Image (cartoon, rainbow, N blue to C red; front, side, top):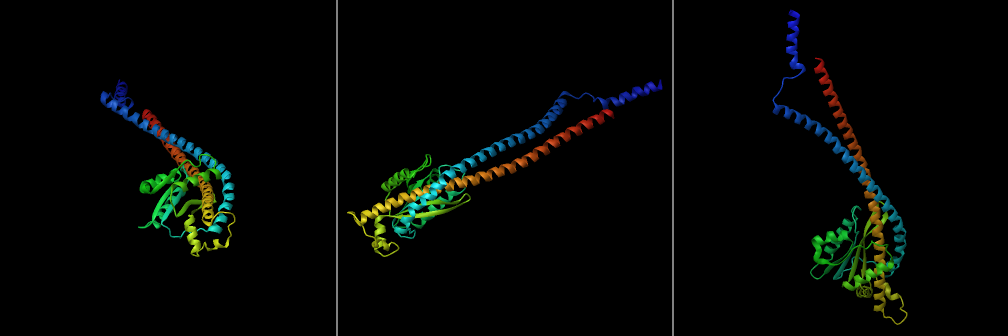
Length: 324
C-alpha cells in the first residue's frame, strides 16, 4: 500500500514536468506566435542572403559580358583611330596649334559619350571645357559651347545652359566614317561664329590610360592675322599659291578641312578611350562582385550553421527534459 501511494505521489509531482499544466488560451497563442516569428525570421534571413547572392551573380554575368563587348568594339575602332592621326598632323605642322592665342569669340567643342559606365572620361572632358570657358571669358570676350554626346550635355546644362550653342547626340549610333564627321563639322561651322574652335576630347593611350586633350583650330582671319604678325604662323608666306584662288580663299578651305580632320580624329580617339575605360570599369565591377559574393557566401554559411546549431540545441534540450 505504501509503495502504491508513493507511486501515486510521484506521478502527481512528475506530471507538471512531463506535461505542463494547461495555460490560458491568450498566453498559448502568444507563445506560438513568438515561436513562429523566431523561426520565420531565421528562415527569412537565409532566404534574403540567397536572393542577394543570386542578384550579385547576375550582375557579375552582365559586367563580364559588357567587358567582352567593349573589348570587341575597341579592337574595331583602335586601328581607325591610329590611322586618323595622320590626317591632322600635316595641318598642325602647317597652321600650327596655338591654344594660347587671344581671340574674342571662342567656341568650345566638348566631345563625350552617349552612354555611361565608362569611368570618368566624360567628367574630365566637362571639367576641362569649363576651365577653358572660364579662361576665355571676359568683358570683351564671348565663349560658347558645342556639345557632342549626351553625358556632357547633361552636365553642362545644369550651370551653362545659356552658353550652349549646339547639342548633337547619338553620334556613335552607327559606325563612324569621315563623311559623317565632315557633314557634322560643316553644320557646326555654319551655325556658330568663331575666332577659335577648341576641341576637347580624350586621346587614347592604352586600355587603362587616356590623356585629356584640347586642340585649337583658328578662323581664316585669325590665321592670316597671326601670319602677318610674324608669330608661329609666319612661315605661311613661304608657300606659293597656284591657281586663281586668293590667299584668303585658300586659308578658308584649309581651316575647314583642318577642322573636319581634327574632329574625325577626336571622335575616334574619344570612342577608343570610352571603350577602354568601360573595359576597366566592368573588370573592376566583376572583381568587386566576386568579392561581395565571397562575403555573402561566408555570411550565408554562418547563418545556416547558427540555425542548425540552434535547432540541435533545442532538440537536445527537449530530449533531456523528457528524460528528466
